[in-house]
Image 1 (spheres, rainbow, N blue to C red):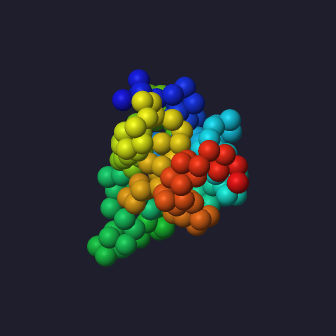
Image 2: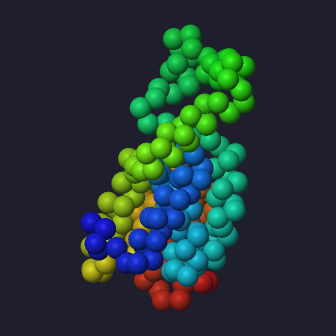
Length: 185
């Protein structure tokens, strides 16, 4: 599928990987793709986001304020609490024994050793939906605009609520794409 991506869309994917690595994530999520779009400032999608007040700094602040609750392969905090496991207490004890941030440093060390960060389920879904959006529009390649449209479908992870909170919707983005020059309005 990546052979159909435009150079800017490929750059967004590379930037998403960089952001995932910098944020010590164990997978590339839709939020990292959103950060990648925000960093690719010379694209239609970035212009549309900027016109609606969506910035890299704002997205990063929101992500830092609301850490992920959907870690792949791990039960959620409430499920663990129901069987008597208190994650906050576990973290406290690990940090008492091994120092502050011990759990984060082990995840980051593993990635540095292996180097590859896989795509999470939500990012894969965004990219699949980007392809579908390009096909729906009759476009021959997948651009950053299609990646953004893919993020705006339900079930696409952490990027959707961040965009929805700023009034960016699938219908609005489609309408802006259909109206040349609308991204900057």
